[in-house]
Every structure is written in C-alpha cells, then in structure tokens.
Length: 419
Image (cartoon, rainbow, N blue to C red; front, side, top):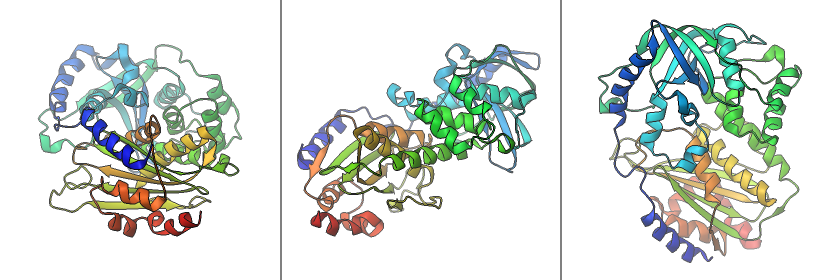
C-alpha cells in the first residue's frame, strides 16, 4: 500500500478505535476505598489466609538492602493470574484505569532491609518469595502480617501518580501447596556455573516470554550460584529486554536487508507509535515526543518534550538515559519482527505520548504496542526522507524539528538515495 493511502487509512481507523483514555478516569479512588472492606473480609487475626500470589516485587531504594514483597490480589484469589503484568493485557485491551485497578488490588506483603545476596537460600520469607517467582502459575500462600496495610484512604486526585497497591509488613510466609516449576527453569537452577545472560536467552528460546523471565531474574534465580542476587523489579525488566534484544540482534547479522521503506503504525493507551523500516544493516533509534499536559510533561504550557537514543550495527555499551526502559522495550518488539521475517533493517521508532496518557502504566505498553504494530497493513515510501516527511504531518513537531533531534533522520537521506 502506498504511504499516502496508508496514512489516510490510519486516520479513518483511528476515528473508529475506542479511545482508551478519552476521559481521564479516576475511578481508582473508589477502588482504594473498596480495598479496605475486602481486606477485612479476608483477614483472620493477624494473618492473611488463603491468598494466592501471582508475582513478587523487589524495590531498588537503599540497594543492596532492599524491600521485597509478595503480591496478593485480596478478594480476587480465583483470578489471580489476571493481576500479573503480561502481554495478555494488550490482548484484553485494558485501559489505564484497568491497570490502576489491578495494580492497587495487589497487597504487597513486604519486608525491608533485605540483603540482595541470596545464593541458594530457599527457606523463610525469601525462599517463599523465590518459589512463587519460579512457578508457572499463581501459588497459594499464607502470609502473617504485622498490622494493617499502609494505605491512605483519603487520597485525592492530585495524589494519583503511580499505580501501586497497599503495603503491609510481613512477619512470615508459608506455601500451602507445592509450586509447579517448569523443567527449563529447574535446569537453569541446577547449573551453578551458568551465567545469567545465557540462562535468560535459553529460557527465551524455550518459549518463555520476557515477563516470566524478568520475574525469575528478579528473585535471584538465574546466574552462577555464588553470584545470585535479588534484582529490583524495574532493573530486571530492562535487563531482560536488553539481553534478549542483544541476542536477537546477533541472529540478524547474516540476514538480507528488507527491500523497501516500510511504515507501520499503532496506538495504545494514549501513545502513538510510528515504526519506519529502511533498507540497510541494523541501526535503531527511538525518538519520544511527550505532549504538554501528559504524565511525563505535566506543564500544559510547555512545548513538546523531545528525547532520543540511538545505536549502530554493533549496538551500544552505555545505558540509555533519555528514553530509559522504553528504548529497550521498543527495540525488542522490532527485533522480534525482523527475526520472524528473517531480515534486517534500519529502524526509526517515533513515539508520541499524548495528553491522554494521564497515568504511567509501565514499559509493557511500549513493548506490546510495538509488537502489535506489525499486524495488518503497512505503507511504503520511495525513500526514508519521504517517509519521515509524511509521518511528521501526523506528529506534534515538524519534520525539521525531528531531523534536528534524530540521528537517523539527519544521516540516512543521502545513503538511501545511493541505495
């Protein structure tokens, strides 16, 4: 499909799509009040009885002595799996308020000051937490609590920023069933000399998605036995995206390039993604445009905030600061597509964060939006520069402003003309 036809098609389709964040939804405030009554119904004495945990949480503050928690959906034990972040959330079409509802329904039964060095410790609270992380389904657990959850039931709209659930101090934790651990995970645990990077790629090749792998990594269940450590949840997410991305990039080295410039598009949760693929060896850049009034650029009078990060054929050795985890999440989605078609390409991802993105839900939405961008139709263009100019008409900045910020937009025009 020619690019001009594709862009017209996209405008028509966007008008038909449901606006997941059309109205800033603060129903989460009611959700916080409902939690108190559910908690009272499910607590016997000082113990949370009959809970089911789908996941864990490891904090990063005060590293290497961190807070660690077991997450339990109080009052929703029979559907605990839907509260764990996964690619299925995209398939369900969850909105921002849905994410807040699920996240704030998870009681974080936690301990503070836990040293990250766990080695092969599988007893006590840390052991239970690790057993939950390596299981392939939610696990029944009984948690002894020291007091009621810490939650502000008088929270105002101005307080709604990050979707986190109530927290309570855990005195003890016991499994009430034997967790089922997949054989590939057992294999990574049994090999005391297997470095974490190799174990991560092994699990990915065995069909584990990055969501499952980053939980296992976070619990300190990957890597050489003497070096196994709890990994803060936020760090583990980016580490797995980066590690798997590097692996996939390595598999593309000998592949042929795509033959023509392609433009793909997707929108989700107030975020618009344009993915431009051009002929040539692997190169990648993410440019983010954050609208004034959006969660990451809250001043409504400010201009569009621009951030970018880039890598060439050999990748990069330093962490990305400007675009942070979104860089690695979007890159993974692109690399999975190129791996599926057996080609390589130069890739420019343009992310427009509109003011409809009123609450942060995590980089999973970046990963899934880019993964699903490669479904259906795409547009073609005569050159990379022509693609950028046409797409810029649908962005909050001009093509000239984009070229000034984007490494690829300023450097590819001449090489594509030669191509």
